[in-house]
Image (cartoon, rainbow, N blue to C red; front, side, top):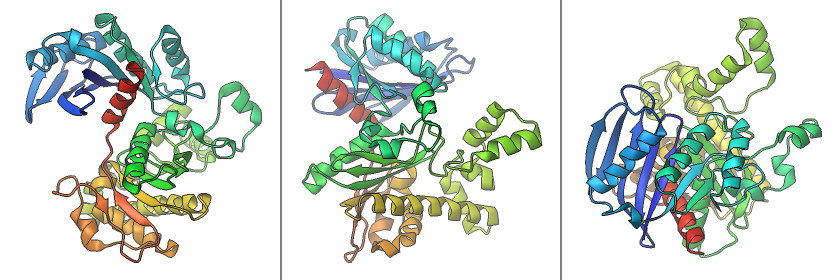
Length: 398
């Protein structure tokens, strides 16, 4: 059975077609710059990358390209072979604690929750509506980025602000990267041979979040009402004093929207040293760039602090710390620097094992902690697309 995974953004659309239940990727690709004159796409099939380009006015036209690519490269003989579509949706609010079959009611809730995901939901919705228009009989599933975290206890998701803000405006911690954290939790249950795992999952990429998992369920996480909170990231500030907003607004005459944009797109590593990619920052730091060195020190410190926080939250009972996503999977220097900072927790790192595991090397996963470490430390590649399709397959075949 063939299932399609779709991640539609405001001007992009990523896709993968899976054969299920074998979990085999048949074809994948991405379409960029939707709505701009220089729209283009890349499709990968049988290890070969094929490029294409033409003006795509909207997501409807992008979906036409997607489906024509499936047929052109013989991923399907007919669109009737597609038995389900899984859509990544940013925000499920408090209403959705799991993936759900898309109905008219679900579509209305996605529209309503746009106020909590203004950058993502219009694209998510455009992708859903475009595919529903051409595949009206195919069941579609919304897989929410926030769902995994909805098991957090109230003490962890509430903010110490006027309670009426929560009642009237839904102001609380929701958390993100939930599909990745759910995937890693699922894999680690298998690896450790138990369901009630306690984990600290470090999803560290351009966007980054850490999740505390208690008894196999989401217990706390670093991102909050929006994906801006928590860790210092490639271009996002992470947690800062909220009074900075008013102060800079008065001093600079920038608007709140402009400052928020700067905190999302011009801060983090980029804000401190001008470079947003961790690899570039590491290179610059090694070449003596003092701002790059400062940025790395801040970056590593913040990850280490949250690991220590969640170690305490879990009562010191942690089965494993897991590094995943771009930097987590490939940045062995960053992993070592972070783990050295949490050495007081009894964590040690095996330098040789750590350096041997990266996406561009032969070994992509494994334990990198030393034999005397009180907590196992793993590197584990995430696979959000597979998690989306596993959820979709399960719901469609209920």
